[in-house]
Length: 148
Image 1 (tube, rainbow, N blue to C red):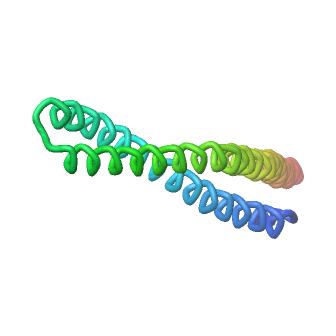
Image 2: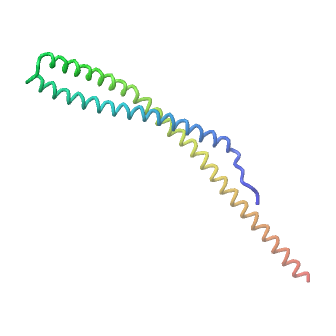
């Protein structure tokens, strides 16, 4: 029986490597996005807590403490705004990485489908070839049986 050889195997390998590269790029973009989301949540939580503490300090605390809380809250607000800007800027990179991964996946699957079809065709042809050989062997036996 002959061995199946897919002539586009190097192309399929290249597409697999490309998809793996896109998976890595997507994983990095997703990790950066997730880290940004965590930071935004942490900062907004700290800002809420600081706002409550500022309110309590305004009721009972000293002016120096009030100034410290106010400065800390302004710092948190600036940091939160900076993170929101960074998050907005990284969103297109994440979307681009996701679409590139999808495209690479689609390209690889296309070649794999072609390989599957060629393999099925090869197997059908092999089955037909085997069947012809059996038919020829049977016809030869029958012909030899009639000669006797």
